[in-house]
Amino acid sequence: MLYDGAIKFLGQSVPAMLASDYEKKGIFINKAVAIIVHLTGTLDFDMGGELAINLARSYNYLIKRLVKANYENDPAIINEVITHLRELRDAWNTVAAGPEEDKKSNPNPPSVNRLDLSLAA
Image (cartoon, rainbow, N blue to C red; front, side):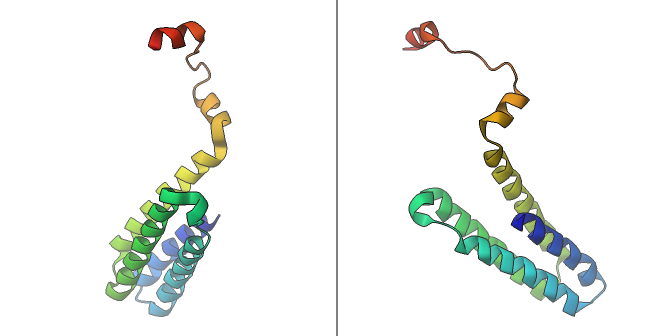
């Protein structure tokens, strides 16, 4: 839901940017930045290890890009960040769906039995 919120706010910032409504543009970008900062704050580096470190780097990059987009009034950068946020959201949705979703997408997975394992060794 947080990713969707940030995507929504950034989507609202582009028309405001194009209309030179700098106040609204700033409000929407700041809301998206606040969500990304919150996501950064929820990372557990002890449990998440390398994944948490990589997510923190990604979030930091996205925040820097949004600052630049706001300063330069560049909708292309906003669209770049939206693309990254969608990819992150979709990845988390796949993880959250778990193995049951895999079974739906591939109802006949290859079976593995003891004979298969002994031959593979």
